[in-house]
Length: 157
Image (spheres, rainbow, N blue to C red):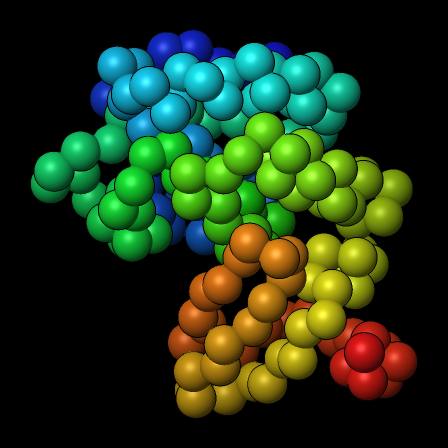
């Protein structure tokens, strides 16, 4: 899907995003941010090849609830959701990090193959928080059970 423009002041509700399906790329930033503007050509390039990724540009700033719910502190910050779950987070990435992350996202025909989405991930279910890693630049915390079931080989990696 082509890059959406400009950054929108209207923000979707976090609950809508958590209940969503498919791949969503949230981009938090500002129209005047130099880092955001510098990454725009790379984002445009990778999204032209991925029509299955919904791109939402969100104007972030002090007191914006959606950005705070994702703990956004620097611009641009990219959050990648797959069926409502955060699978990648890029904070002020380089062009190459953006290209690598978008290229590693599952294709529509591989939608139910989470080992491609969460490479090298150990997943525990329950109320205990676990740290997990899905891409070299992604670190996140989960506080609720993950609904993916991975084959035993994926857990051994």
